[in-house]
Figure 1 (tube, rainbow, N blue to C red):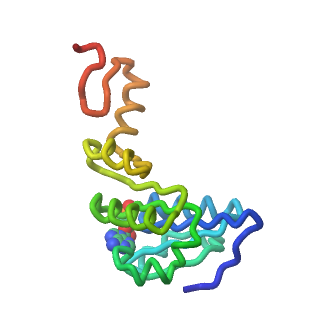
Figure 2 (figure 1 turned 45 degrees about the horizontal axis):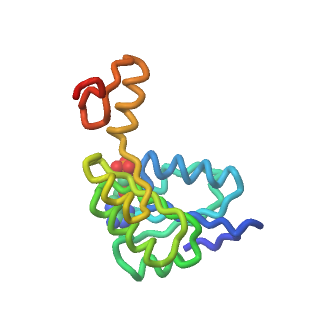
Figure 3 (figure 1 turned 180 degrees about the horizontal axis):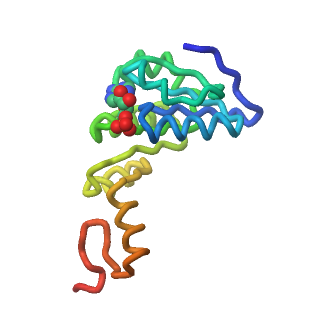
Length: 153
Ligand code: AMP
């Protein structure tokens, strides 16, 4: 793991999954001077990080506790899990909560599972829900993410 320096506010974000979303987020946080660590099980994925990325990277499967320990998850102020698997993201988010991380966000492709995890204090983002909201803004039909028309009873 590359060494990194925490900033004055001691914000420390861990991003799991260095796909397009994870890499973009990591680049943005780094550009704002935040301490950030990105974990991915595939080291090639870090090629998506910008040359000016000043955070740290860790190769490993983040569903393993020793990887989370190496990431010093107990010091993290935020964990964002954006791997390509809902179950992986949920597992990591639940572990982050157990470690006392204040802000935990998981990507869920299945929007039907969002409410359950919100009840556990895990914020979720669902590409399907976000897309539906944007499409609805353009169409103005009043549909919800589950495909129901809000005007229906
Ligand atoms: P994308 O689907 O493009 O957002 O990429 C998701 C990323 O998550 C890929 O780079 C995967 O290698 C990574 N990934 C998937 N599962 C894990 C895991 N268990 N631990 C760490 N990274 C993972």
